Amino acid sequence: MFCRTSTVAAVLCLVHTAHAAESPALTVFENVRIFDGKSEQLSANMNVLVRGNTIEKISKDPIPIDGNSSAKIIAGGGRTLMPGLIDAHWHAMLVRPTPAALLVDDVGYMNLVAGAEATDTLMRGFTTVRDVGGPSFGLKRAIDEGIVAGPRIYPSGAIITITSGHGDFRHAHDLPRVLGAPLSRQEQTGAAMVADSPDEVRVRVREQLLQGASQIKLTAGGGVASPNSPLDVSTFTEDELRAAVEAAENWGTYVTVHAYTPVSIQRAIAAGVKCIEHGHLMDEPTAKLIGERGIWLSTQAFPDELADAFPPGSQERAKAFEVFAGTDQTIALAKKYKLKIAWGTDILFSQRLAQRQGELLTKFARWYTPAETLAMATGTNGELLAMSGKRNPYPGKLGVVEEGALADLLLIDGDPLADIKLIEDPAKNFVVIMKDGKIYKDTL
Image (cartoon, rainbow, N blue to C red):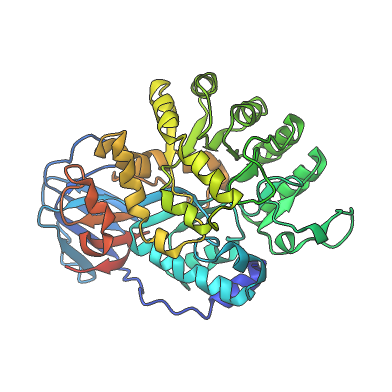
């Protein structure tokens, strides 16, 4: 499927990106209206100075550059300057391949494909992703070193699951599992690790932390894509979940879990988990508990097309539509109990659907105002990323336009608070894309 960090980085060294970054020492955005990642309205016309990778100054008055010949001036013309978008539920290595290809395709090819998708992700305006499952450590390193253009990656490393749980893609011929026997292919590649006791969970969590995980991901209940994992099942025991939480907290970070049902969500909360992914089948008492405990809910508005990754009549396809049907109730409960909502897409197995990443964000305008929707994918998601504490691979403030924040910025031709559908066509409407103070796109 994939390979370990050193090999991934070596393979990705071969990638040539057409989106080489321009790295001016100083950049001044003149005459821009700012969406700061939090507010309900755009600012008045402002000027913004970026020095290196940091927003240094925001001013109504012109910002002098004192004849600095290396400074780049971007005439905003009243356009909207906003933070780069953040996808809080992404699988960088799993976007383009089919489920079958994941188990058989050449390792080098798979990583080159992931690198190409990373570049496309950045050019859609997503400057950061929280990767919640898959061997993305090498891809992250290649991006950070400038070998490949792509978003910042907050990696979880391997999905940690139980025998028969969501994320266990082994076949019958891989069973029975014998302690000490060779690992399955998914485990060898670091895509998913099976752990069936508190002690095994601790080992697998610590392995991901050793490789650079910023947070840990477990599957606390059944899932759609795994053929042997019914939606209604609860997987890890509370003791196993607690072992993961303890190991992560020893490293100053947190555990997030895949969970749809009330039982799996409540068990995870009892064990100390800080974030629930999905939650589409939860009930009202569960939503109330999430709110009372201050737990994050990282959720999605799945499009029906996501089910196209599975054959007609398959159990995976049926499970997908069961999950999709729960979206309205989940959002209604989240609003009723004022839950802390992070936004993501969870796009799997579809390059075509990934091209609609921004459109999946705009779907949230069905329940929230455009400003609230964009705040989820910027300032609010930035708060979730900060929960990694000292395991944060990019110390600094993300998701906001304010002095001292990291310079991940989009210049948009129009006002997305008045017309959020501008986000759906980044090729046309995103005229400047900046990440870490570097300019990857400038059509002005």
